[in-house]
Length: 265
Image 1 (cartoon, rainbow, N blue to C red):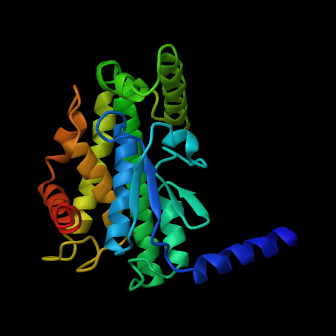
Image 2 (cartoon, rainbow, N blue to C red):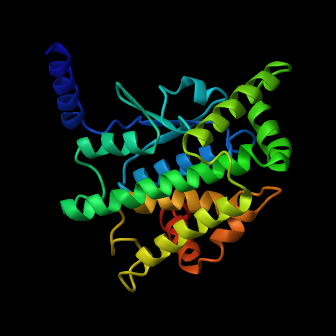
């Protein structure tokens, strides 16, 4: 009973407190440390908050992953907003929704349920594909993942950090049954996801977002993953080459980037 009352009190606080002006996103260093799956998740959160027109700062730190309260996949980013800390895309979105500041409030319950099915698809397929290419592909791992992940740690701690990070990534791939896939099967899953997204994007003609003229949660998470895949240089560019085949998705990424990121520079 006490736990239930505490949960109600926390929910009341979330709903009544204004959005803090000093809300801060914590992430690894972009130029030299952040990995593809983490970058996609961080960019999705930034896009979402920008679409909500909520102010936030970004703090890069070497141990952002270890500072995070945890999460289902990348543990990143995490946001500190007043007395509250939340990690990863969905918990952060839920936090904003409880404060009644979220995009997508114009959607009815059926449309929201439909939209969240797409959000789940995007997060699962793209995050697994990003983890696969980063940790299962030997060339990508040796030339990009390991050097970037270990760059902020001295020897031999960098090797220990890389070992633990790769072990956790492979364990997650096994949980989602991606560990035994070959690269062709991964690309096929990504292509099918892109095909589904492009069909949804074209469902309402002459509108820039997935559900019409206004953005929603799906627009933010799709942009985060698609744009990160398209703009991250790897020794194996199979994911980017797959996404590039879907011109409407590429144009969607260009539109969101120009509307919410380029204009704010």
